[in-house]
Image (tube, rainbow, N blue to C red; front, side, top):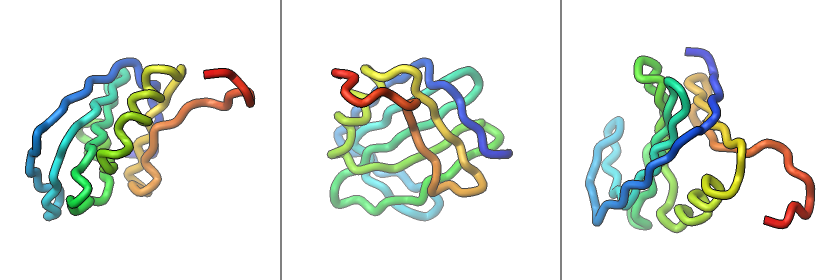
Length: 113
C-alpha cells in the first residue's frame, strides 16, 4: 500500500475505564479510542493511560486502516479539532508509520475559532 490520505467524514469516540490491549508485542493501557472514517479508509487513534507503554503507529493495508497512539491528556484537543475544523484528513503512511497524522488544511491567521 502506498501512502494515502483521505478526508475524515465521521468519527466515533469510545471511552474505556481501562482496557489492556497488545499491539505488536507492546501492552497498552487504553482509556479511549477515536475512530476516524472516510470512504473505505479509517484510522483508530488510541488514547493511552499516562503510565502506559506506547506502541509504534502502524497501518494494516488489507483493512485500509491506520493505528496511532497518543496520551489521554491529548484527547480533548484532538476531539476539538474534529468538531471545529473542516476539512480534516487522515494520512496513512505504511512506508513511514511514524509520519501517520491527522491534519487540517491551510487556514488564515486570526480565523477566530
